Amino acid sequence: MGRLDDLVALVCGGDDHPLAPALRGWAETSRPWLAFAEAHAAKIRKRARLASSVGELHDLIAELAVAALFARDRRFSVVYEPHRASGGRGPDLGVTFRTHTLFHVEVARLRPSGGDDRTALRLARVVGDKIGQLPPGAANLLAVALPPDTAGDDLIPAALRMLGRPTGLGADPASAGVPPEDARAYARGRSRLSAALLCSLTPTGRPVEVRLWLNPQVRHPLHPEVARFLVQAPAQG
Image (tube, rainbow, N blue to C red; front, side):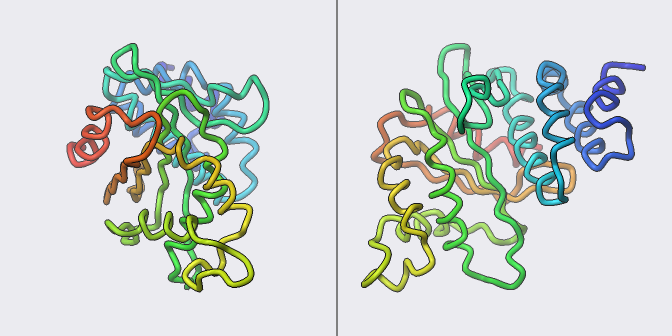
C-alpha cells in the first residue's frame, strides 16, 4: 500500500466511506495536502467517526476542502484545529503565509434551506454563531460554503447589516429572525473579522463561485496577497 492508501485506510477504514473519494481527490493533486492530512490523520479520523449524519460529514468535508485550497500552494502551511488542546471553541485552521504571517480560518457550511430563501438571514446567524471563535492578535477569515447558485456580491454586506441593527422589541423588520445573542456576539467580535469568504463546493471539494468581503475597520487585515490568492486560486483549478 502507498501513502494515500494508508491514509484512507486509517481515516476512513476503506474506500466505501463517503469521505474517501474526497481524500483521494485532494491528495492526488497535492502532495502538500497529503502531508497535511497525514499529520492530522488522528483528528480527521475522530471527526469522521463522530459525524452522526450526512450533514455533519459535509461540514467536515467543507473544512478539509478549505484546508486543501491553502495546502496546495507551498507559500502556506496549515494546521488543523490549532487550539483544540487548550479546550473551548477555536478556529478550524491556523495558516501561516510565507513562514511569517499567521491568520486563522473558521469554516462553516450553510445547509440547504428546504425552501426558505432568506439566505442573508441564515448567513447572519452563522456569522453570529462563529465570530466568537476568532482569536485576537491576528487576522481571521470566516469561510462559508453555500449551496450552489446562492452566492452574490451583496450577500455578506446584507447579512452583516442585519447583525448590526437592533434586535428584539421595536427592531428593524429587516433584522427579524436574528437572535439577540448573535447580534451581541457580532458587536463584540466584528473587529476581529478580517474577511469573509463565500463559495460553493463541487462534488470533488473544489471551491467555486467565490466571493470575498474585506472588513475595512478590522484591527488585523488579511494580507493583500492572501486576498488575491483566495479570489484567483479556485479559478485556476
